[in-house]
Image 1 (cartoon, rainbow, N blue to C red):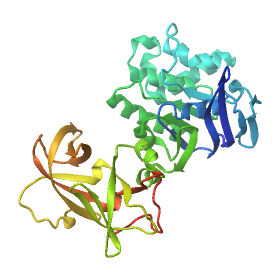
Image 2 (image 1 turned 90 degrees about the vertical axis):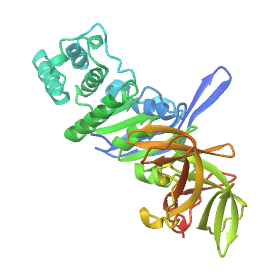
Image 3 (image 1 turned 120 degrees about the vertical axis):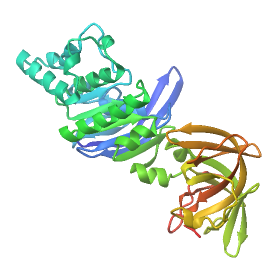
Image 4 (image 1 turned 180 degrees about the vertical axis):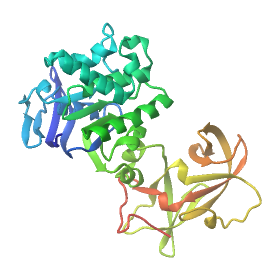
Length: 383
């Protein structure tokens, strides 16, 4: 296995007189035997980072180390990709259509000149682990997408690599197959004890698999942490959106007895403690699951005891659009042209009057101008 380190890695692509800085001073350490995620939107720089680790690109500046060995530095490739002992699974799986699945898995072993008995033993060993023995005689075009993905993983693992790189590996699978594929990759990683890196734009991949995550945006490493820490405490508004669905709304501030009310039309959150914040506006982020929707009935407004956390009733609104998703209803409120999404556990229909409650312990506050997270002594003191 291998410990991977990037020191001040930058990458500049040139086309004629035009330069594009794809990465800027990336510093990362990926521990031996870890499952590490690199998350970012399309064009953020995550695939460039992966290609530099793999040796398919050299950093324009900075260095990459495997354990304590420098493998590339300052526009030079010191150790070629084929000598870095990497297993890679690409978005399109890159299986050879003219070969059967046995031959696809065996191909890297033939290149390394393993003898036939060793090749057969290794192919069948991986086929048993991945549950694809029955499709070895077929070609990739004759099996399902999920089975193709397993063949691609088997081929990547065939030569006992030091680490495994997964580049958007589940994008071509349907929802059910993606869940199975994630579980499979986790199982293989745990059984083989191999350092694994997954590169994805989909936070679901990251939350399901990664122990630690680097979020890359516009070529910069903007946050590093566990999936839970990043989800609950994003460093800025952009990271908050990258990690999952979130309502972002600008609020006016009104001080009241040392605390603040956050006001957006008739959507008012009370009793927020802010230290050393001097703007009259603030940006709030709240994830849909922390905005609770119920049909409006004659119920007591003191709703705080109904839910865990510091829950506050916001008021009564009208449902604008409703979508069903996996046992819950996604309800959109249209407040003066701004759409705010919450979650209901009961059926809600267009035009229904609904009560809205917010879990104040889960709100995220960002500076109105910079959109950076507001961090206080205890993150945010919520009254």
